[in-house]
Each structure stands twice: as C-alpha cells, then as structure tokens.
Amino acid sequence: MTFPPINADENAQVPWPEPQSPVEVRQSIQPRQPGDAERQATTSSGKKSPERRMTWRDFVNISISMAGAQIAWTLELGYGAISDASTSAYRRRFWIWLATGALVLSTLILAYVEAIASFLVDMLTHMEDWNPDRKKKVSHLAIGIAIVCFYVLDFALNALQASLRNLLLDITPAEQLATGNAWHGRMTHAGNIIGYTLGSQDLDKWPFLKPFGKGQFRKVCILTLVILSITVSITCVTQHEVAKERTSEGQGRFREAINNITKAITQLPKPIRRVCMVQIFAFIGWFPFLFYATVWVGEVMAYEIGRDPTVADATRAGELALLISSIVSVVVGTVLPYIAQRDTRLLSKGDDDEDEDEEVSRIRAMVRSWKAEAARMGRPLHLPAMPFMLRNIWTGGLLLFGILMMSTFFVTTVWQATVVIALVGISWAIACWVPFAIIMEYLKEVDAAANAPPVPPQVQAARRGHSRVASSPAIWRGLQDPRNNERTPLIRRQSLRLDYEAETGEIPTPMAGGTVLGIHNLAIVLPQFIIALVATAIFRIVDSSSDSDPNDVYYGKNGVSWVLRFGGLSALVGAAFSRAVAPTRTEKEMRRRLAEMKETEESG
Image 1 (cartoon, helix red, strand yellow):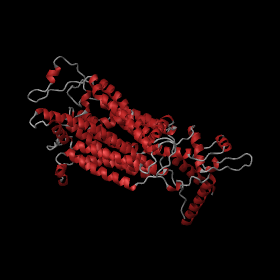
Image 2: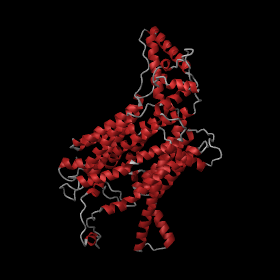
Image 3: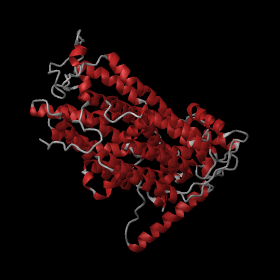
Image 4: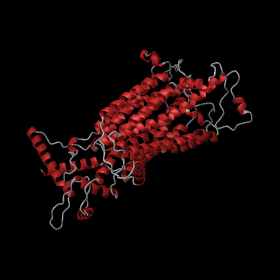
C-alpha cells in the first residue's frame, strides 16, 4: 500500500519536516563513547550526522515539564469552583468568553509568531538584518513565545470545554442530560472531521485567505478562529442562565470557592466516586491508543512489506485510519443516542411534589386509556419499552474496546489495522457521551435528594425496616402502618431522599457541579502518568531486546502492540467496575413506572 509524497508548504514560515514518529525514542539505548558529541555535531557544510542516543536521564530532563503541565490541570478545579461560587446569571458564560478570548489571542500569536519575534528583536536590539546573531535571537524568541502560547492554548481549551459542560449541567433537566451530552459528543466528532479536512486542503489556493499572508498553518489558524468565534457566540447568545441565591452568608467568593473544592474532595458522593474509578481504568486504556495508534499502523505496515517503511507513508496510513475512526464516531454518536432514546411516557411530568398515590393513580388511568384505545382500534396494547441503560452502554463500549485491543495479536496487514481503529470509533463515541451524562444525572440526583423536605422520623424508621426496591411498583413500595393498615404516601422528593440514603449509606449533600466535573476531569488526566511509566517499561523490555536494525523505526518493533494490549486489559477491568455504577435517578423512575404499567395491564 503506497501513498503519494507529502506536498511541502513552500510558503510556510518554518520548513515542514517529514513526519516524525515517537517510535524513535524507543530504540536501543547505546552507551556514549568519547568523541560522540564531536562526531554528531553539525559540520561546517551544514550536513548533520545521526542524532545521539538518549539516556534515561535525558528523558527525565526533557519530560519533567510535563509533570508541571499536568499538575497545572488542577487549575480546572479553580475556575470550576469560582464559577460555582458566583451568583451571576453569566457565571458560566463569563468563563466561556474568557477562555475563547485566550484561545483567539494565543492562536493568533502562534500564526504570526515569527513576524512578532522579528518585530520585538528589531525594536529591542536594533540589529541589522545581515547580522547572523539577529536570526538566532529571532528563532529563540519565537520558540519561547510559541511555548508560552501552547500552554495558554491548553489551559484555555480545557477551561472552554469544562465551562460548556458546566453550562449544560446548569440549564438542562435531568432526564435530558443524556441527550445533551450526546449532542456534545456529536459536535466534538464533527469538529475533528472538519479539522482533518482543513488540514488536508491547500489553503494557499483559497483566494479570500490571501490577505492573511502565506503559510498553511497560519491560514488553518485563521479559519479555526472564525469557526470557534461563531460557534461560541451562538451558544452564549442563545442560552440563558438563571442567577442563583447566595447560600453562604458572610463568605467571600474566594472563600466559598475554597470550600467548594474541599467539600468536593472530602465528601464526593459514592456514585460519582465509582464513575471516576471506572474512568481511571478506562483512560489507562485510551491513552495508549490516542498516543500510539498511528505508530502501531506503521509497525503493522513494516511486517506486511517485510522492511521499514518511510515515516511519511506510515504516518499517512495511520492518519487515514484515524480519519475513518472519526467518521465512525460521528455516525455512532448520532445513531446510538436515538436507539437509547427515552420514551417520554416513562418520564416524570416535572412535578416533584406529586406523592406516590397520585403518581400510581395517574399511571393506572393512563394505562387504562391506552388499553381502551387499543381495543377500539382492534390491536393489542403495546406498553413503552425500557431503553438501553447508560451503564450497560458504557460497559459494552469498554468491552468492545478491550476486545479490539486484544485483537492486535492477530492483525498482520494495514487494512486489518485500519478496520480495528475504525471500530474503536464506536467505543470512543460512547466514551465522549455516556460517562458525562451519568455523572451529570448523579449531580442532579444528589441535589434533589439533599433539597427534599424532611421525612418524619417514624416514617423513616418504618421504611428502613421495610424491604423496598427503587425500581419496584409503587404499590409494593408502600408502607403498611400496623396500627391503621393505611399507606403513608410520600412525595417523590422525599422518596428520592430515602432511596439515596438506602442505596449509598450516605446523607445527601448539595455539591458544586463545576468543581465535581473538575475532579472527574482529573480522574481522566491521572492515567497519563501511569501510562508514561508503563509504556517506558514495555518499550525498554520488548524493543530493546529485539534483533532489529537500530536504525529501523518500525520494522522489528512490538512495543506499541504490547502497550495497546495493556490498555485493552485495563479497559476490561474498567468494564467490570462499571457494573458497580448504579442506574441514574431517571432510569430508576422509568423502570418503576414501567413495572407499575405492566402490573396495571395484567390486573385489567
């Protein structure tokens, strides 16, 4: 399988090198001999000899900044907690606009970084253009500015994504959170495809982009900023938040934000802790795939053709597989939520003050009317069907991903590798949708249970001694008072509070949604450290012991395959842990209403 050569961008500010592969860092580490540095130095003719081998100390020195970068991810707890503490009707949209402004500014600076560096050097040093030191200063300054911009870009992008999810949590009813997060996933996958498409086009031929100067990267940046600004504006203009009342009197916003973080860490509800635990194992599986999928395709290509392919051909084959995977994710992210769509007849009518007797009477009357209508039409009665539960979909996605990673034992051709990566798009669509929907519904459930009216002590004691299941019909969940043999109905919010306490053994406490989502995001980030250590060990054991040519990038390498299998094994562990994730409040109520409907149908 061959690919056309890469078309280098002659007008780019920085010459485009051939795509490089992270496999190179896994080649056998050779001890340095005296004189190595001199032999590897750049010669006066401008030709470079092969680069020196990296030692473990070199890797530590070059990678230690990643620790600082990942620790900085904890800033997400900060802006989530601050927006939680705000009472403004713009508390989420303020951070959305602020993050978007930082993204626009940093991306514009990156697009014109060489011109900006040249201007600053001229302004501060007044060096002549022919001075060789000027070019060196411009290069060093441009690199420094780019590094700072990339850090700002990273923080701002995470702040934007987190704030958008916080906004979704604030304004969406609990029963629609699954649909809302599905739309978030669809837009994410669609954005990936648009990004791939823009990057593959020759933007220098687009006439309306010529005023912005030359260079593919610069024009991609401009188009990206236009799309980002339009989409963010649509969201912020069309969505409206509600100002909330301050709950902590006498505390400043900063103090309240600190309290939100402390409370979220020390009192994180058990259902949310379980979701975070599953996410840790899931992303121990996901990060190897996200980091090394392209490299793995190169290794498979090397075995298929019996020699080391060019890095350009291997990278292009891997990127094609990832593009197909993104398309699959868009399709699955669009179709699967519709298959799992919740029947509105099983959803609540929005009245949390409706007691159990009223709800049972309403459901029975509704079923009788359906039955009469079916008899009049001469057809059997069809009750609503219980949709796929989010937990089951998540488990299925993790099982599929684990099986696909284990299938790398049998993949020997590029087309087989492409099929595997494409099918991973199914699991990725689920990973971008289900966990966020579950955790947001849990947050709504905890808040509803915590804000429920108090239950009389005698009713609490009696109900705790009564065998009851949250999804069972209401008539069997009723309390029989031994003194008067009458049921003691509770309104739905009171019943929810008792259900929560019985299932978790915890007292429901209101949680700051943005802060909790920040903790959830930290559970996603944490596996990067684990994978960095595990992958390094696997590469050292597997690839350094191979008999392949040290100059080969792909041929004779198996380390990436074993890292992917390790990730697949972790995903299978995550699938097992996902079975401990309880159904959401909406799912439990839907299951209970369906059981009530079936009993009414059977009783006639």
